[in-house]
Image 1 (cartoon, rainbow, N blue to C red):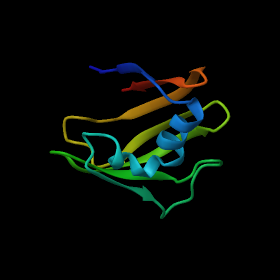
Image 2: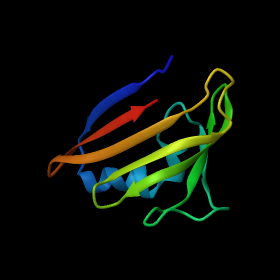
Image 3: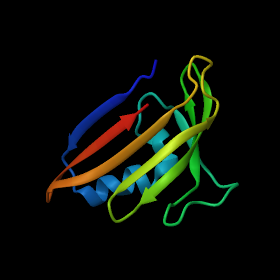
Image 4: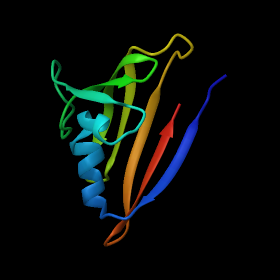
Length: 116
């Protein structure tokens, strides 16, 4: 059985500012995601072309540290994907996520997420 999660959220901020938070500050998800109390950037391996870091380590409540690495990063299209490479709970064999940001106007944007 494969579980797939999809979601979209509208944010009252320009797409460039939202992209700055979720992509350029990718390693800092612990500063704004409620379920992740701490995070840090992965700096021990090279980053993909254009990506700010290679990935991140997230401390997820009840699960410990999960290491995630970018699988693609597209600055122009404001899209990226990542996969969990270490630390998944035993009931999960794979975790892959894709995020995108698009402008809905000068002060509004949409973030779309798909995970499996």
